[in-house]
Image 1 (cartoon, rainbow, N blue to C red):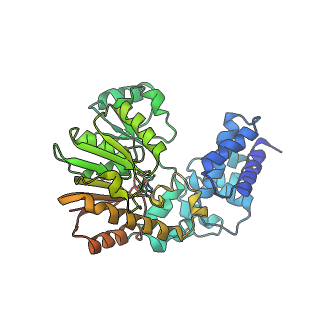
Image 2: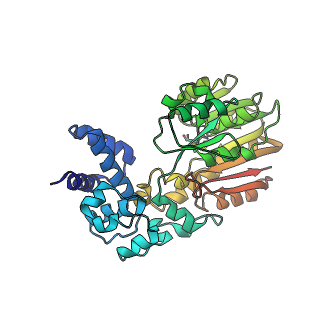
Image 3: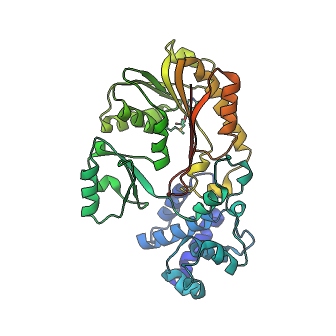
Amino acid sequence: MTRWENYVSSAEKIIGAYKGSLPLHHFLKTFFKEHPYMGSRDRRWISQLVYHYYRLGTWGKNLPLQTRILAGTFLCETQPNDLLQALQPDWNTRMELPAAEKAMILEQPLSPEGIFPFTADLSEEVNEGAFSYAFLRQPRLFIRVRNNKLDKVLQLLQQKNITYEVFENKSTIALPNGTKIEELVPEKSWYEVQDASSQQTGAFFHPARQETWWDCCAASGGKSILLKDQQPDVKLLVSDVRRSILENLQQRFKAAGIKNYEARVADLTSPDAAGTIGRQQFDGIILDAPCSGSGTWGRTPESLTFFKHDEILKYQQLQKRIAHNVIPFLKPGGSLIYITCSVFKQENEEVVAFIEANSRLRRQEGGIIAGYDKGADTMFAVRFS
Ligand SMILES: C[S@@+](CC[C@H](N)C(=O)[O-])C[C@H]1O[C@@H](n2cnc3c(N)ncnc32)[C@H](O)[C@@H]1O
């Protein structure tokens, strides 16, 4: 067997064994640990073959596995490469064709629902074609520059010849995926790794000085740091159901130089939430809800194959319960920012309708934050008051 045939055979083995119960990158890590004779170049090729295969979603389901693996590379790459040159040289001369034309060479027309099997569930504002076809490209890495360090960060990137794009806001920088930013910019307080769409949710916060805010599903604090950067003297409470993630938050806040905040472990589905949070009321509540994450699946394309449709409803029920339990903590006239990284209307518009039907809150601004046009995640953020 040639080296290239070996790569495809390893990819076949992995795809045959992988059942989606843990993230693909963990599965690959374990696989390579068990096959220590594979060098870093082998690992890179094999991982890429597997990822490209999952990027196709349900497209070409009836093709033989080997053909589909090669088709993944054919459709997802735009430049000729040595593997296709060895195994499918006729395709390799046509790498620059649009994906839809490449798909026709295989007699398998490309369609949004072929790649993303849940197009019927998409939020209205999502462009189903642009969103689905974006799965064929690996998303980019984004950082948010802090503390006026744009020039310093750019200087370090230029020194290492890293290609980058600075967005109009002068704080979002797009980088090639896999950039080792922590090695390039050792000063952690100069930037946060945060997806471009996640950064954009901050446009709906509008915090004023001395206000009291609660980031009620804070995880490791991405939105809280965004809030504190906008208004450092906001009084902040962070909570999450997971103690371990709040420990990560504490470390991240320390690195970011954020000191004044309170942290609590709280399960917000429990009627007891008030017992943990107390009687206080907030000017602003950020509810960055647990969700399907479907707006981020470009980074975990295996979800296109393994996500179960009935999970959407489970997330919606969880989101409604949490929203119902946190709304009483909002001061009259205060702002609730409801956020998901989902593209499903059940988790977005339907939860907005639920909040409006069950409280005095009314949607003020926001909606889908599309990421598919810039190699970013797609999110949903709405401010109620
Ligand atoms: C989308 S993540 C939040 C991301 C975070 N805001 C950020 O920007 O990094 C949702 C969080 O909700 C938390 N969560 C899930 N169920 C919860 C519950 N019942 N009560 C409180 N938090 C919950 C999860 O542990 C998870 O960390």
